[in-house]
Image 1: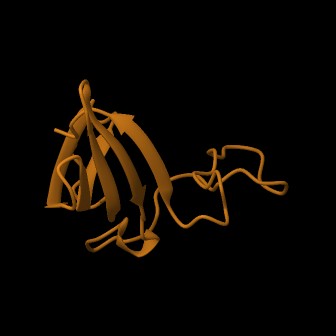
Image 2 (image 1 turned 180 degrees about the vertical axis):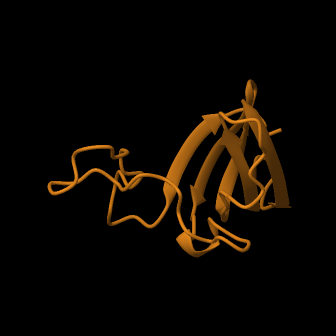
Length: 113
């Protein structure tokens, strides 16, 4: 498995225990021998950090723009189509769990890096 990743986080304290963050994450995981730098899984958004005795409680809302997933000379999506009522053979599960929420919400405890 090949993996590459990059993260950037700007932290702004609001109180002694509460902070606001702006973040951007990029990366890709592949089962082939190539790193696939032309497939960029980019996510960015705001978050909150609440300091607890066991580590920060993190609430992040990540937005993943589909326009930035594939870059370079062949910018077509190489994956099989998303499974639906009309596509059932050789398909992949859809990533949109909540179709009305643009992105994903993550709640975790501990530092991101």
